[in-house]
Image 1: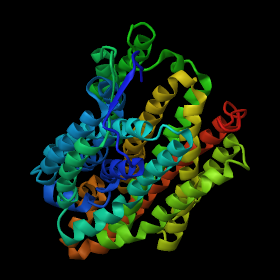
Image 2: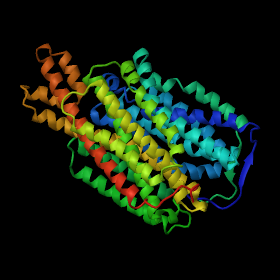
Image 3: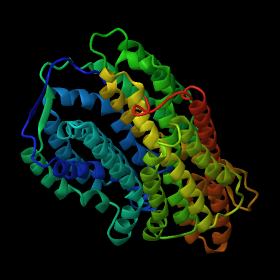
Length: 510
């Protein structure tokens, strides 16, 4: 993210910065919950809105893609209009988009509302982090505040399915969007009155062409991945993917030639920084794909309720929190590259065991493997978030933090897009290749999605067990192939950590 010249302007700083931090964590918690709160809503969305598997993927991850695509531009916009003002506007916009999502009558409407939520959400993370820097000028206190900020975000992502499961069972899926709306309005009023303002006096012009190129690249790649997952490899899919790649190349090249780049060119030539961002991206992608698929296994294969499934996700949330809090003390004893590699090996072992497992998985087995995956990747995330900023020159630390946030949010979206698509592709291939005695119409319905298979099974008593067995075996196959993909990503993470990042130290060690 390009930093414009000119002094920063601050007004109205509160006398109690820790109270300000407590206030700033609220929009971050809402932002994080919306990442995963719908992971348990797939059956309800399929039933109430008639959402197809491809639409379910879009509903889940368009939010993350829009946050990632506009995170940098919202950081630049905050320089111009003021961080507090942008935060207040973003919270009110988030509340409005949440209301639209809650009462969506169709899957297309919900996808559009989730995209608006992503746009509004992109204002929250850079604004809160920038205001934390204003509230805590002392470096030691700022590090503690940012650690609390990061823990609140990761814990909220992990707890999203738990909250979503309870709300969906007790009320309806739209209620997961409504409950934070009045709180966001109250927050906007309190933020306007108590938080300091922070902006740049002479901000650089906003490069709208770069904004469009970056957003087009992300959405184009997402469209191509999802289309390929459902077997659509036609001219349109290939053309969109090619256009997205070209847009990405043009966007990167433009940063080296425009007077006011969105991304500092110096960061795009830093080999270790790029390796660190790639490692952060792959680890978050693998974990969020896992978070997306595991609840579906509990619901669709084991037939559990949303509440029961949410409670089964609690050990994974606990593993994330424990690993995040245990990692900083380990940094004094283990060098960062080896700690990152250890986390990747632990997570990779969990994914590998999952990929090699044949037949139905017990709840205990899946929970233990999930805890290994989440603990390993959570430790990696803590180290890499600190390391990426440390790898940048001091004058570009803020820009590197913006790229780190973007990589994390993009990983959240790609986890659903890539691992979800791999799972869908493998599921359909397994159903179509099954030797079970199903007529063509039944097989086609079962291959559409496991949700469709369960609905068909309930309406076809003579074939109920056969349909459910075929669908369950196919879903396990899809989960296994997604785990294979994640295992490969973890292997690559180990390679990057022990080669390109091998000599890297934390700023404190240096």
